[in-house]
Image (tube, rainbow, N blue to C red; front, side):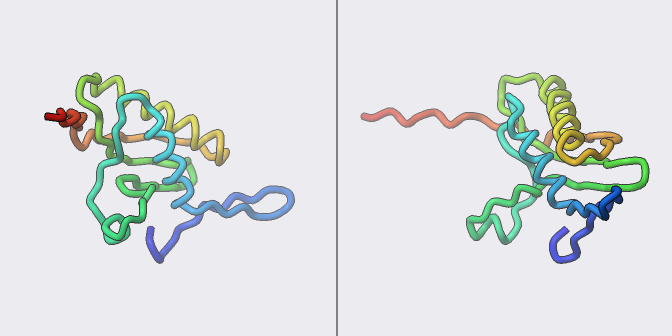
Length: 126
């Protein structure tokens, strides 16, 4: 979705509305990161991340057709949380947010658990 941006186009009585797939990916990412138990999105590092820029679409893939939106995403889950419960909560949060913000129908949200993260223990002062 870099240079070759795709747009979802909806026609209403006043004209056309174009929504970038990147916008849908950012909405999905933000919704997933708000779910308790999600530590981050999973996905390979890209050049923007190496340069210190956050990439909110990393680990998210959007496919749009006439039936609606399919969202594929990978998340990292914090140790101690039930994987299935967190993944289901991510599906619900993402679908709800994308539908409410874009008025598009979400067909499915496929969640891949890319790994488990552990909290770093604070170093003791000796």
